[in-house]
Length: 187
Image 1 (cartoon, one colour):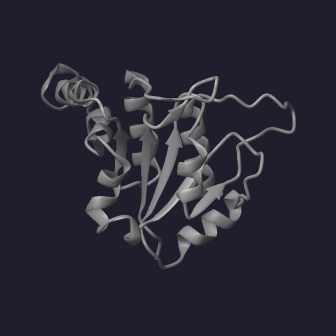
Image 2 (cartoon, rainbow, N blue to C red):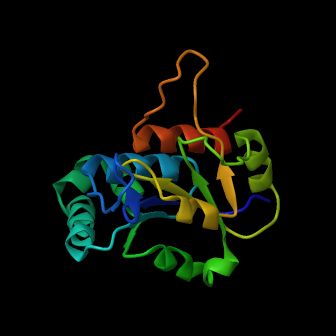
């Protein structure tokens, strides 16, 4: 038995390059690409967390275009992936369908290593294979999630890295795809 896995892309609160708390904009590519990765790796839902109603409405218009418009008929696989996208204003709204924060395990990824004790992908993968609460995996936009969110998580997964380079500034779409493959891929 495997635990259910859900993905959330956080747009607020997020850090900017100077470390201030900001709200980032939703991008069309993040909607499509992470939805496709999430569905490919068996995630039940992909949440876009944004406090601004106009940004959530943008996502709904894009979904409608694929659900009801010519694009959905032209590329039905993308229509299927966009069906798991849910827009919500807060993280509490992500947890609500499962009975609230106490009823889910919240995991997060971060490119930062300083002062953070992390679980390896191999250990996280093993934890997903057992019994337990649903897992919501958080990804941050901008310059990452503030320490307050990371500290409130049940588990932090190790940063993605390479032995070939110390450079570590992947797009969130790439980080989500790599993370999901490491957690649920055919390895």
